[in-house]
Length: 85
Image 1: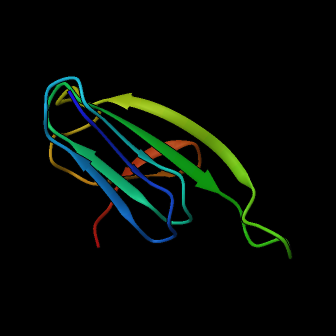
Image 2 (image 1 turned 90 degrees about the horizontal axis):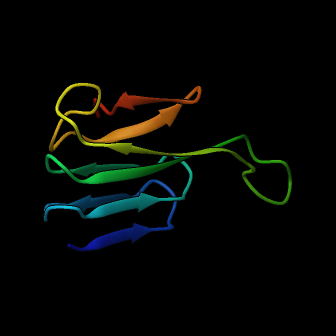
Image 3 (image 1 turned 135 degrees about the vertical axis):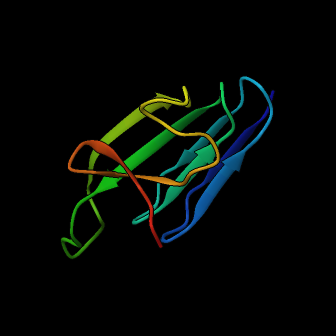
């Protein structure tokens, strides 16, 4: 059981232990975990002169179906999207 948190822009968080959580809050950030872990993704809007406003924060279980293990995801349009970069 562990947690990985990353608050930087264009960064990543990764977890491997059972029941672990990877959390990303920065602009264009991504997270991945092993089967049974959770990822928490943040979607941010465009720069408004002060910040990149938060649009959505969502948690997903790495279940092997909707969310694949050991695959990076970003939150885009309110949905988890595989990161292909």
